[in-house]
Length: 202
Image (cartoon, rainbow, N blue to C red; front, top):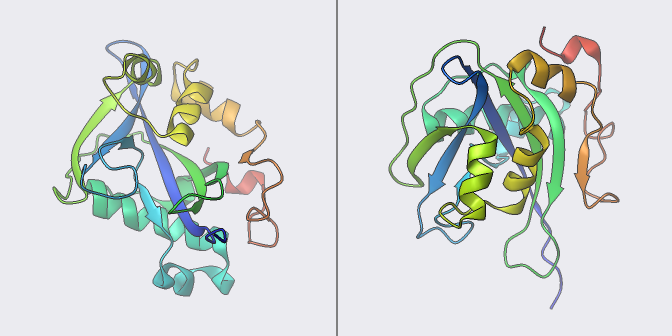
């Protein structure tokens, strides 16, 4: 059978500080178990990049369309308004061949400095949880929470940070994680991504 072409997608790690335990927490959403793709799994907000996202994006390029998609999906799935100017691109994952559904997904981090109210749609998303990356990894290890591999690796990448300032300093200097490393679906400059300091939140 021929390999299915991956669909462009985008996802975002919403991160906040919690003073009670001097740590950071991320927002995870539990997908409806009836969904074909990652049904019942805990994931970050996100989804496929729609035609309208490309239409609204500068030059109809994939990177600016991914920004639009993340803002839209976060609102649809969690009821949260985020500013695309706060998004930091950190990774890009392409689903391996031979699978029934494939995505090539832009990963972003979005720091939250103010309190937000989460409202799930009770259709695609049934529940949510603010949790420290370390605690989520412990739950995954105990098999009490199912995390897709990209979600788990992302949590591992940020688990040792304890504050937003520490996390942001690290991710703005780190290399973009690309899986697989030679992915033909990640061509950042051609797709409109430029790693400039002016694009980083202060």
